[in-house]
Amino acid sequence: MTGRMNENYLSGLGTRLRGVSVVLAIAGLLYGTTATPAKADFAAGWNAYQDGDFGGALKYWKPLAEKGNARAQFNLGVMFAEGKGLAQSFEHAVKWWQKAATHGDAEAQHNIAMAYIVGNGVEQNYDVAVSWLKKAAQLGLIRSQYALGRMYDYGFGINQDQSQASKFVTMAAEKGFDKAQYNLGKRYRDGKGVPKDRKRSASWFLAAAKQGHMKAQNHIGVRLARGDGIAKDEVKGLMYLILAAKQGHGKAAKRRDDLAAKLSSAQHKKAQDMAKYWKPVK
Image (cartoon, rainbow, N blue to C red; front, side, top):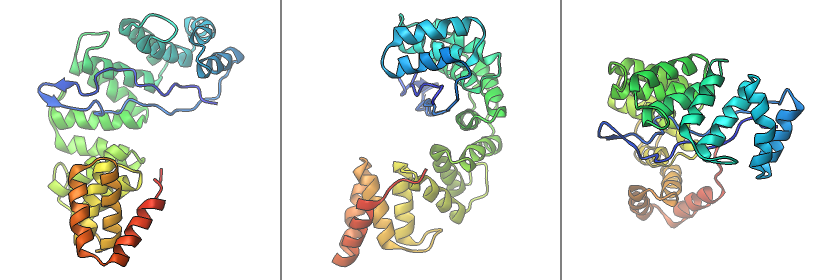
């Protein structure tokens, strides 16, 4: 039974930070944490929420939140942020996340950091955001580790440090976070905070591509077609370019067509069949 809500609590994911468009996928804001409710009331609230009965969920969760239940406090914050069951209020959302954060709730700490990055419910403050990200990252929250790496990358709220950026991005990548894997692939390609390494770059692009990351699929498709940092395999390369193009990657579509024109009809069909039956590996 899920005890967290898979919600995007912030609006405007294309927010510009100091002129740089950092798709608040600086951190990614979706959560899939599961927790077995310790109390029947929490479970009843979750069932009500799943059924779209937000008022019913609020009836169960608010008393629990007021008694100090961190999970209920976190979920109540999301309900305020989304305006489900009550009037939308980022100020109240942050208030409840702060309560949950004091109990060591990493996801609440992450949400608070995102609020300070954007300035939702609080005054925008990158320094404070970084302090919350450090707490959540230390508790092992993957998205916070990645987000902290990106803050080091851009120098937002902390001194720019590509070595530290790579350290935290690597933490998230090694735990399977596709955005981090893709970013690490670029870092090894460019020698940004890590030594240039074409093989490692390709391996990280491949890891993200296997999960369905569009840009990574485009990159590894090109690498496979050329044998750049990875054994040459034009058919598999074409498969990934087909997948990336299907997701809307413009450059991948042209590269797909160019590569397909070089291959035999049998190779082209094989790549198409592979793409047709391909499934992401999470």
